[in-house]
Image 1 (cartoon, rainbow, N blue to C red):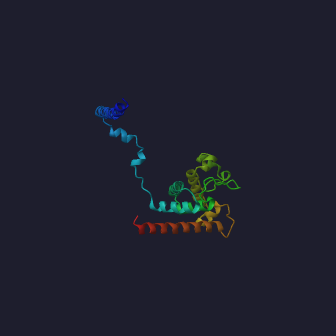
Image 2 (cartoon, rainbow, N blue to C red):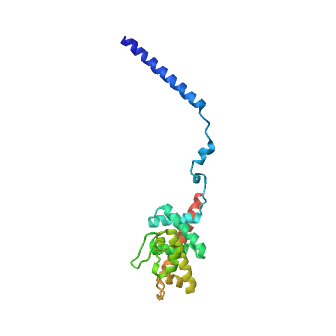
Image 3 (cartoon, helix red, strand yellow):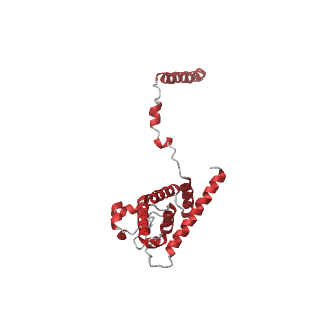
Length: 209
């Protein structure tokens, strides 16, 4: 009797396997066809969107990310915001990026003892109307709004002072400094960024990218 039971077990497992396979086949046969359009609509749209990147901005973002130890994606957003803000007010985007480098080293939550806030170190009490229009002091912690407001202030100072150098000194609150140390520091940083951008483009060209 035990021997008979042992021989019958494989037969039982085999029968169960066949039955399961037949059931699965029947399910496949009667299952509704997949709606491929519906399936595609469930995939995030950005999967299908290839957003073009400005090569110059990409090179600068990579350089600044490595230099100031900032996450690559965050740096790309800040560089993009600087380019947009600069175009809006008619400034060189490299100048705006140079000011950010000197003022905050790309730290969006930087705050000085004088109360200067954010990437471009804006002091709210000196620009109450502009800060209010931007959304209040809390808006200064938003990188894009800070850059927009800082570029607007810088453009106004350059226009009011008459020269780029004087405008930069005005921005720093050092208009009386005849040596223009701040302006020279920013312009030297701009030159450094320009060189980094050229070197990056050369590297990309050599790689055929």
